[in-house]
Image 1 (cartoon, one colour):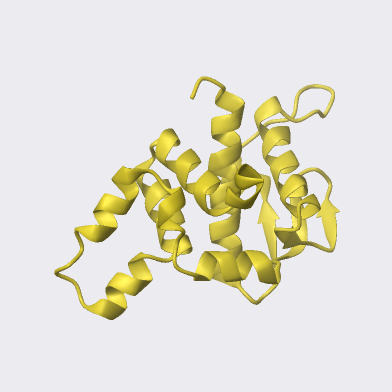
Image 2 (spheres, one colour):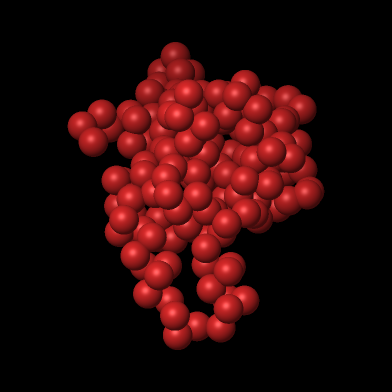
Length: 156
């Protein structure tokens, strides 16, 4: 994937959703710096492009119905954020393996040696998000986000 800002968008999306899932059903504050890293505003008080892209991802996810929040804290955070029911359900459910690349599904199929309950947990969308983030591979993160979160848009 050549567009760095799109790779960052997918990474930010995965981190935001994992953080909200980990706090669910509590409302929480999402800080841009916790996702995109530290930022020093310039001499005019303007944040970096990276910081603003992450903040924009938060707002976009809300606009698209993946999360709700009560207010922004300047351009530094969204306050009282929580996943919507649809996104919580999607993340909790078994991942749509037919929409994910073969490398991801092969790993799940190779887990025959683990107990069925653990295997079922490893097949959930949220587990695949966490695993993709842990891998650090931008292509894997993008494939996972697209396959799980945006698969409806791709099929229309």
